[in-house]
Figure 1 (tube, rainbow, N blue to C red):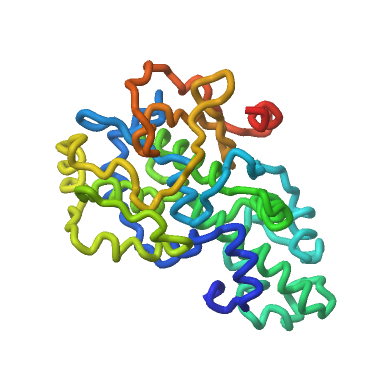
Figure 2: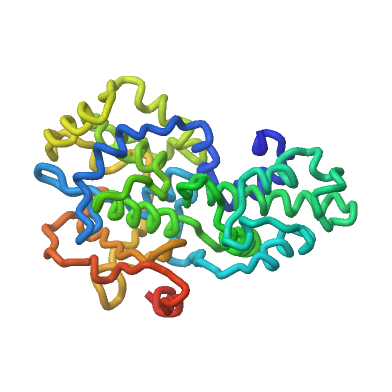
Length: 343
């Protein structure tokens, strides 16, 4: 309802930041696919290992789904920011007098944002603590900021308690102000982190599960000679069902696990026909991997293992334990942001 209530100008701002990712709002989550995928995840190399091949979501594929493809190497990486409850309220033009237990714990409920900036009636509601002073343009600007914050917290970085990390408002604010920013590495880092956590016994996936389920289904839909460059701009996610009309996928965890366990290299779609990238990121200047900044961790990314997905010549990579380069972000950890940006 929030997205549908937006005026064209607000949708344009959100679209610049999120692109076609907004279409994930209409995707039905398939927990059976995710649960069946987990056992195939190799956390030492950040790849799925199947019978005779490896696959891993790539930056270019993630960006392509949202129509945000381009020269990722030249874009500004969104990174986690510590945001105090007062700073959170200030950015959203909400009075510091507003008291809420969630804020002191570094989070807020979706309803907290929606009742102020989701419903059109929020502009005129006198008891919500808004400080826009009756300025509709200021309220509309904060409305897009609140929506992007909520989207990041619900779709890309969900919490088990269904709350939204208040630090995400800092990312959303930078994303709106910097037209060269990208959310893609954040999404991929969160997916990698939570695949590893679930592989080790975790029960809740805190990454973008809907994007992951689209990705694996499309790779499993092998079409001989398929090539459709230039098909898609920002409707890649919304057009997914149409591209899959001639295939029947399994239903249920066991059926999916059986399918994945028996799939071989000649049965998959290696490179998406709609993915056009003249430049791909596959290694750092001094390392065979790149570090991705997520909300909750730093994750190594080694696409040289899956260059065939990007339409490049594939060689058998040297095995390397990448897990030593992954670490959780916490208040006591020194965040190597400068080093990552140089890579």
